[in-house]
Amino acid sequence: MLHKVCRPNITTHDLKRLLIATLATTASMSATQTTRTPSKIVYARETPEGVGATVRRSIGSMSLRNLSPFLMLDHAAIQEGSGFPDHPHRGQSTVTYVLDGMMQHEDFTGSAGKLLPGDVQWMTAGRGIVHSEMPLFDEDPAKRVPAEALQLWIDLPADKKMIEPSYQEKKAADIDSVQPVPGVDITVISGESHGVTGFVRPVGGCWFMDVKLTQPGASVFQPLPEGWTAFAYVITGKLQVGEEATPVDKHNTVVLSAESGQNGVLLTRPDGTDEDTRLVLIAGEPLPENTTIQHGPFVVNSRQEVIEAIMDYQMGRNGFERAPNWKSQIGSAMRH
Image (cartoon, rainbow, N blue to C red; front, side, top):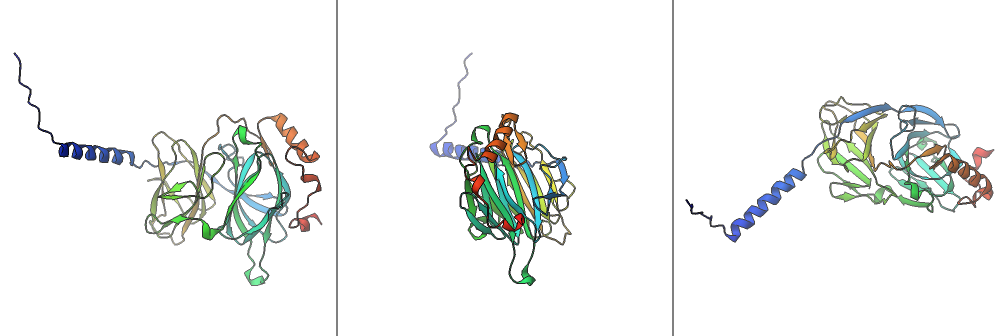
């Protein structure tokens, strides 16, 4: 027996409403916030570095040796009479972010300048560079403070290790920030945050943000690329990562989980805290194809390339042609 099929009378207006509802549902699903959680917490312990300087190191220490693409994270407070005089690099990028005081830099290409609080220098060493990084102090003794800065070393993809060196540098006043909710301020150096895009275009994927939580209970969800390595380093105050994690104190690096579907991280200043929370949130695309060998400031692909880098530096070739006859002015005091 045949049944008569009744077709509903769907108008163009109805179809349009149905389409809008479907798109809204899809957008809502895609906007679901699933936070990463702490997978490892490492305290940045003091270690000697450079000439007379002491840094707090987490990434690059024995406790956190491999975190591709990140090689090292140092938090330095550099006193008078100490610093980082002339030294080479090959095969990595270095990010210097000044928190307090002043830093000055100079390299064998003729580039020189100074960095004030909030200024950023993103240097891609590539095939080779020699430079000096030293603290700079105010002439007024009452205003002399240690040069406090973070420096991050980032591995370069294997096929980019011998590119020409380059700089991306910006003053604090020219770096965009965003306040997505009350009590939250995010300075976007690279990557994206709530509609703001950072100025740095790194070789390889890397996001770098300075997050300040200025009210007790302030909380923000920061989207991150899925699958990327990510961590938060607490500069001041206490930080809760995720929804139920125990707050961590300053000078701790919190490595974040990277499970499927985790599309960001929830950052919270705990209730009842007196000090503002400040952290850097950093994420990078892992380099599983790299067979990274690090020998001091040389980051290359094999032990043979370590030997070649040392020989190139000593003999002034393959990117280090200027090295034998160059000495920085700012590092001269350290050579006496």
